[in-house]
Each structure stands twice: as C-alpha cells, then as structure tokens.
Image 1: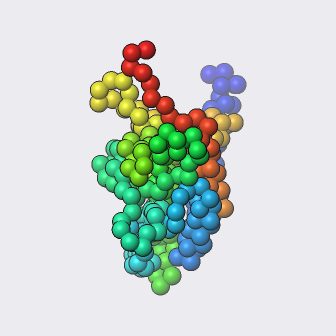
Image 2: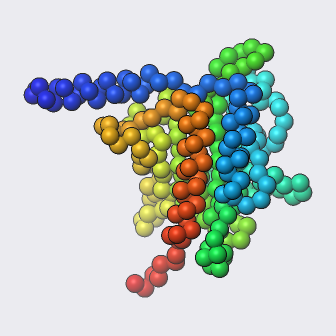
Image 3: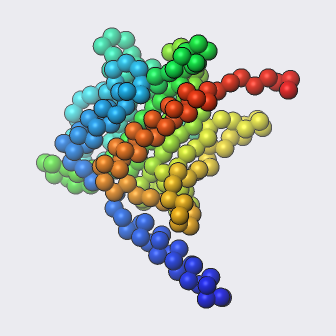
Length: 241
C-alpha cells in the first residue's frame, strides 16, 4: 500500500471518529420549549396562518413525564380554533402527518399551485428524574405539492438524523427526492443526497451539537426551499414531447 493512500485512509478514519465523538443536543423540557419558540418565530414569515408545534397532534403536557428511553415526536401544524389541521399521507412510512401551506407568490397563486410543508422532531428521554433530559434523534421537513388546501403529492424531504440513529453510509443532513421514477413501483426516495460538509470525504455526516445550529438549519432550509418553489415552480410536462 502506498504511503499516500495509507495517510488518506488514516485521515478519513480520524474524520469519521471525530464526527462520531460529537454529541447531539441534550435539552430539558424548558429548553425544548425555547427551541420551539425560536423555530416558530422563523417559520411564521414563511408559511400561511397561525402555527404551533405539538406532540401527538395535541398540546398536552404528558410528554414532559416521558420515562427513560421513551421517544417523543413533535409536529408543526396549523393552530386552528375550529375544524381540523390539514393532513397529508406520507410515502414509505405508510402514515399521515399534519402540514401547513408555504406562503406562495403571485406566480404560484395564479396557477392554483400550493406547496405544503411538514416539520417533525424526534427526542429520546435520556434521564429518568423529576426533570428529564431529552436527546435529539432527528429533525426533518417533508414537502408536498397540491392545489388549494389539498396536498396531492409528496415530492422531497430534508432530514438531519443524529448518531446512532442513522446509517453509517448516509450523509447528514441530507435531501430525499420522493417523486416516482418512470418505471412502475420504482422510487429513488432511499437515496441520501448530502447537504454539506463536502470538504471531507463522504458520507459527510455532521452532528447537530447545539440548539442554535438546529434552529438555523431548520429556518434557512425552509427559507431556501420556499425561494426555490417561488422562482422555479413545478410545471406540467407534455406527454407527447
């Protein structure tokens, strides 16, 4: 083995070990509430209507007493006084999630097109006491396309899974493209498209080690995606071309 190749492999191994040694966010109940306040402040200028972040599709406080090892998931949803939130089916998981509409510009409005977004966080209880701590497992957006108030198609996701809750070969954070391929029953949604850290050798795994990074990644990712939808709206493709 050449000395240069050996040094490169040692360097890559050190980078992987350094990435794994970083610890993900650990937060108290109060700190999770502060994170949600910061997220909502950033999301409000990008979506339509009043919004909230809740667990189990309600806003009770039972999650605060989650026992050691328990998992709590939070979703972004419309804060409606009457009626029910907009619900969209998710690919792959065979489940549903609440969504809110991204604020659209006149081009999208004139076409009757509506982009929707779902936000979900997963936290795991790491301490069984009167004041439990929670470790961040994942944070993700799922984007849908539709008309009016009806989400019709899941189109892509932006996800950030934390070790050890992710594959060794998956970049984090990453994009997923959920549109079906032009072959029946085939999809490319399992492919992880890395979002950063390209200066290192792949798989480009970054750990979200502080609360500010989570909030910044979430708000900037949503802002960028909304910008792309506005400047490059989806268009129908003629089948006879």
